[in-house]
Length: 183
Image (tube, rainbow, N blue to C red; front, top):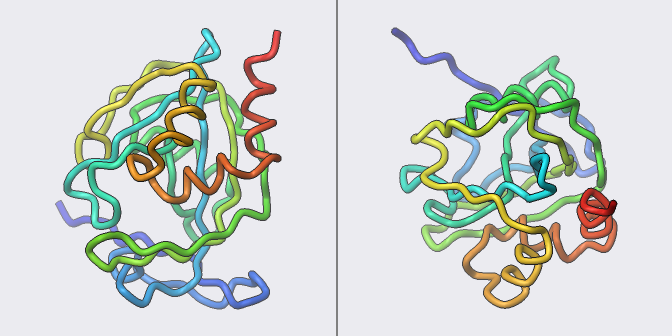
């Protein structure tokens, strides 16, 4: 069986799509700006799903991060990409994702020199099934109260992905996640 090549959408400095590149070639020490997304998933008990990136991941292997991340494919909407990626990474279905921050952008370099350079709208979603993680993507997961997640990120930010740390420092994102647990 031949692996299907995934392509990511490259962006110019004005966040307009400027081309595509094979996903396997994008993340290097000179990663071009590209479109991505992050999603935070809550269960029926209002717990937030954190995932630990698989050791085989090219960037930030073994670190804890938000529920799911990924890149939309050409001609795919961001909500559809979030749904697809949650199923691929976590083996789980989610309800329709809700955009909570459309302007998040970051650039960070991991210990191996791999650069993430992403315009990364942030979503939340409700779990419609439990996780059955793809071991090549996720090595562990935990459902936690959002307050515990925020405290952990504040206490030991190096244990988490830099995009998650930066996202949870944004008042808009923090408020939207806290709102999800309000009665």
